[in-house]
Image: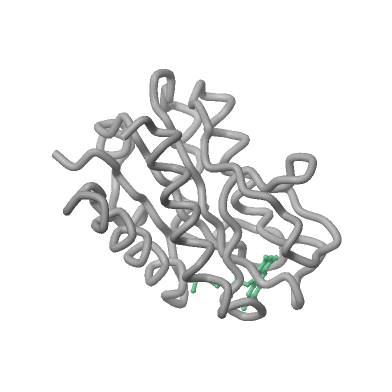
Length: 172
Ligand SMILES: Cc1cc2nc3c(=O)[nH]c(=O)nc-3n(C[C@H](O)[C@H](O)[C@H](O)COP(=O)(O)O)c2cc1C
């Protein structure tokens, strides 16, 4: 079994593409460390099978969860994340939605924290320009922020650095 389960939701494919880029970054350390799943076709049992979990979610409809995550969200309340290490990445558009930048990542992370998960992979927010975000924790985001509309050029470097960080924080 892979060491990490990555679960993403994606409506126009950007988060899915980033999910596979993250898998490729982990492959540089050890082949097939990460198993990628669409949350739209996953059960709570499939998620909790993994001790180390990465969750990928874009924000949609001005501060809302992406559709597949919206459907899955009530199930999070019945899940026990105790003993699981969880890292988040979120996609958003800071120029178009600066008052709700990456909100969905914050909403899902809050729920996972409530259900006992240990959250890793916090990411400094200083290289972004936004007004408000539910994913903000002081001068960090609760996970990696990716903006394929406004800062696409920064994505490869961000992914490489974050994957190295998460691998260490997961103790792998
Ligand atoms: C109608 C619409 C609403 C959006 N709302 C937000 C938002 O509130 N906050 C944000 O950060 N990004 C928002 N976005 C940007 C998306 O999160 C971004 O395009 C993302 O890369 C889409 O990911 P996906 O292709 O995996 O679905 C919105 C985009 C659209 C088209």
